[in-house]
Each structure stands twice: as C-alpha cells, then as structure tokens.
Amino acid sequence: MKNKTSFSAADVHHIAKLANIPMTADEAEKLEKELGSIIDLVNKLQEIDTTDVEPTSQVTGLVNVFRDDVVDEERMLTQTEALQNASSTHDSYFVVDQILEEE
Amino acid sequence: MLLDKTISDLAKGLRKKEFSSVDLVEECYRVIGEFNSEINAFTTVVDKSAALKNARQKDAERTNSSSPLHGLPFVLKDSYNTKGILTSAASHVLNGYISQYNATVYQKLLDAGAILIGKMNMDAWGHGATSENTDYKPVKNPYDTSCVAGGSSGGNGVALASRMAVFGIGEDTGGSIRNPSAWNNITGLKVTYGRVSRYGCISYASSFDTVGPMAKTVEDCAIVLETIAGVDKLDATSSPEPVPHYSKDLTHVSKDIVIGLPKECFRDGLDPEIKESTETAIKKLESLGFRIKEISMPMLTYGLAVYYLIAPSETSSNLGRYDGIRYGLGREYFTPETRRRIMIGTYSLSAGYYDAYYKKAQQGRTLFIKEYEKAFTQCDVLLMPVTSHPPTKLGKVVDDPMQNLLIDIYTVTQNPVGVPSLALPCGFTSAGLPIGMQLVGKMFTESLLFQVGHAYQQVTSWHTRRPSLLNKMSF
Image (cartoon, each protein chain N blue to C red):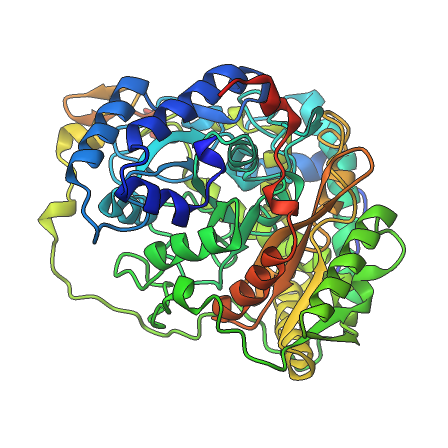
C-alpha cells in the first residue's frame, strides 16, 4: 500500500489518461500539487481501524429490484429525438472520430 | 409581496380568488427582471409569455381539490431533466443539451399543476459549496452581493430568498441543499436516501444523491415533499416506504423528544456568532419542552475523508459518459474543480489504490452508519450547525481546493449514511449574513424533523426576514 502525498507529472498524466480528460502541461502541473493535498486530507482515513468491517456500497437495503422485460413504447425516443442534440450526425448515425486505423 | 406568503396561504388565496396565478407569475418576473442580472440565480428563465399562458390556464382549471401546489411558480436546480428545455448542470460540457424527457420530480410537479419558471445556476455537476464553480456567472448572495450564495444549489437558495419563486427543488449529495438554505435564510430538506425518485436527475454520487425541497418555511417543505416523495419504477433505488401526510402531521409533536448535540460539532473552528445563534436556538427548543442532551460522535472527524473519497469515485464513473458525441461539448470543458474530483476518484479506484482508498472509505462508511445508530439510541434528533463559518466573499475559496472542501464539514456524513436532515434559519451574523442549523433524524423520520422545525418556526421569526435589496422595489 503506497502512501503518496506527491504526484509526479507521470502520475497526473496516467490518471488523466484513465479518466480521458485532455489536459495542457500547465493544467497538469497545477494538479500535481492539488491532488497531493487532497490525498493528504483523505489519508486521515488510514487512522480508522477497519479490521473485519464490511464495506457499504448502498444504504437502501433493497435487493434485486426488477421490472418485467417489456418495452414501454411511451418512453421510447424517436430516431430524430435521439439525434437532436448531436453536433455531428450522418444518415441517422452519430459521427465519431476514427477509431480503427488502416493497415 | 404575494411571494412572502407561505404555500398554504397562497393556496387559500388562490381559491378565494384574492389573487391569481397570473399575479404570482407577474410578481416573480418583476423581481427576476430587477435582480437576476446582478445575482445570477438562473441559467434559463422560462419565456415569460409562456409562463403567463400556463398561469392563465391554471387559474381557469383550478378546483378546491387541486393540489396545494397548483398554479404556484417554482424553480429547478439545473440538474433536473426538463423536456424541451436546456439542462446544463451549469457546465459547458452540456451546451445545447435540450432534455428529451422529464425527471420524475418535474413530472410530479407538472401533474400537480405547478408552474416552472426557471432552471437554476449551481456548482457544475454538484461539485462545490459556493455556486462559483459554474460556467455561468457566479451566484451572489442577496443579503450581501460581495458574498457567495452557498452551493451547490445556490441559484435555488438566492431565488427563494429574493422572492423570485415560491419553492424550488434542489439536490443534496454532501450539503448542497442545506448549505445554500443556511446561507440564504431559507428552509431546505435533505431527504432520506431513496425517499424521492432520482430518475432524470443528473448524478453526482449515485449512492449519496438526494432530491429535495427548498422553500421559505418548514411547512412549505412538508407540502412539497408529500407531492414529490414515493417509489418510482424508473428508479430502482427509490424506497417503497409509504409517504406520510407530512403537512397534516406537523403539529402532532409527541412529548418527550430528546435532541442530541454532538460535542464534536461545537468545538474550536466553529465561528463564534454561529455558535451563539445555535445555542440560543437550543435554549428556545428547550423552552418548547424538548430535552437537550450532549452526546459524542467521534467518527465525525473522519467525515470529510470518507466523503471526499467515495463521492469523487462515484462522480468519476458517472461523468465518464460525457464525451460530446451524442450531445454537448468535449471533456476539455470540465472546470478545474470538476477535474480534481474526477482525477481523485479515478486514482482511488485504480489498480493498486482501490483497497487503500475506495474500499477503506466504504468500510469507514459502515462505521459511520453504526455511529449514527449509536447516537440515535441516546436521542431522537441530532442538532448541529450547517457550516462552520458564514458565507465567504466571492473568489475567496473557489481557487483554493482545500478551503473549498472544508466548507462541507458538518454536512458530509448524512449522505453516506442515508439519513435525512432539515436545515432552517436560526439567526444572523452582526454583518447581516444568515445562519442556519440542521436537525438530523433516523432514516424515514422526516415527519419528526418537520414537527420540531415547525414548532421552532412558530415561536421565532428568522425565517420571515428578507434581504434588504428587496426594499428597493415598490409593490
């Protein structure tokens, strides 16, 4: 278990890549210190004795809330509605940057 | 002003035809026209002629059995989907995003006949406690426009304080309804997790987020809650617990209620004026017959650590969907504060760090649940301040990541545990800035919180004060 309070440029670059956030060099540099201080704050957590404590991920106590596998047509969007906010569409498709490269 | 009246008085007046919905809407738009450009409460103001047309329709169709919210102008934090209207979460990442469906809470209010007049400015994505982390202009406090509005539901807070609407729906993940309620002299409720459907609410931290009412009085919040609460098949986390008739139960306060004061909340670091106002409020409650008991909740000192690991982790996941492809702009438009939260969350969930951070925080969360359970064996309701200091000056904390996080100190433990908390006015600083306190209960005890809060508001008048800015207007 690493106890990091400083982030290197490489660390910030790695996290930004995982988080898919485009970043300038200046922005990345600022984050090195900022992330470090936030982790210092949350590291206070390490003082707590959590031996044999189960993690909690939700507090409703509900389990397996199901509905029938039936389409509710009232709630369907038309193709036009679904595409209406996109900046780039083509023949009823959303247009994205190229993913696959030519060999 | 008509907008000084409570929901109950407005409902009566409308039915007696002393005034109309049109009158109410006209008054709202007059105040909006006068002050919104100064305080930046709204991200979208609904077109006035459309709102008036709606109001005329409501006046024509109202009967005595219409909902008490029928014909009343209300506002929504801009994190709620509203079909045909921009929903921005105050972020450029959602530029041009016209909602294609209604959030359940919005649909319920439409069905009750209430009139939406605006979408409200906020800290983007819920990330903040001042409403300065917005891609729209920062929201200003109507009690002192050099100060912040609080957040993240700041737009709601200032609009209600300034009589721009009758009630609002905010969203609270770590204090975002309670903080702006306290800092704008209004009443706001963080509900029990699952009490109100989150369908159509833009998620910040899905296991913490709550949808709740903000208004001038406890009674107003009770009336709004009975309309919006209840299980929703579109939200699998919504609770099947029956919804009590909150407004009817308001005055049935049982004898023998014990109010617990966690001593950790009243130590050094709490502004002396806030401490004094809160102590005066405690004496007032004692004079009403409530028993006061000092208790201890040592886990509270770990609140920020647990919250600021889990919430960013959940938000890093929730905000992963915003890629500018189906709507909006790209991820480079996230503000510095939002980036910090996404990055902290991504880090704490990443390989090698998950156990030390995210899992440890979730274990801490279990200990918080036990801590609150223990506290509620000693009392029925907890009372604590909402913030440790009054509204800050604009610009003071927004660029200081640490100061920004510390504002939440009293409001971040209720959300991981799921318990409800009612924030209400209890005084003013010598500089004229509002002070609020919060009443916390076990899950699904909103009735009890309303009863205690309502009893307090029957013998105090803090909640009736308004910003002096409004005296500039002639009515």
